[in-house]
Length: 186
Image (cartoon, rainbow, N blue to C red):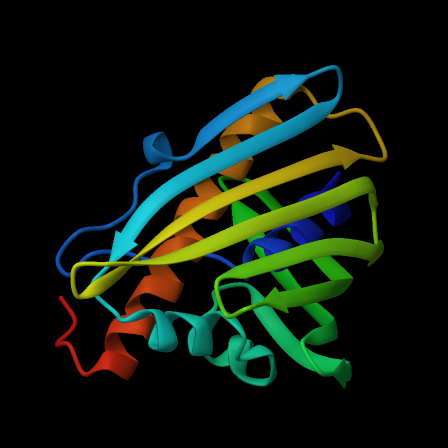
């Protein structure tokens, strides 16, 4: 269980944002659980322009500097718009603490979509898609992830954990986007 959720967090490290002065709450992360498959979606806006948002979301070598729980992140290979990313870390939720490792294939399409899928790890299947769209002077980000754990996890625990971790990751990414944009942090 812990390896799956930690791996999930690394996958999630590809997404996020927060508005100045506002934090993403667990309730803003929509979770659906169907026959062992967790599906999460987010629809968020950041005042950071798309180029800044994309730079943060693809700064794989420095994610350990601004993503909670990520202890190490590195590019294993990079060819054009396709990356293989290895990450490891430790996450906590209430009394639960888990270490994780992740190897993912990430494809950046036209600087507007980021597709990610697991290569190795503790999930039977994991894939995500993020879409970035300019809106006003900022960026609208739509995120969708599907995870099928390799072992049974009670759906209520898994859903709550996923909501919490996605919100935490999004808040960290949002702060980094605003920092790079030059916006004072709350």
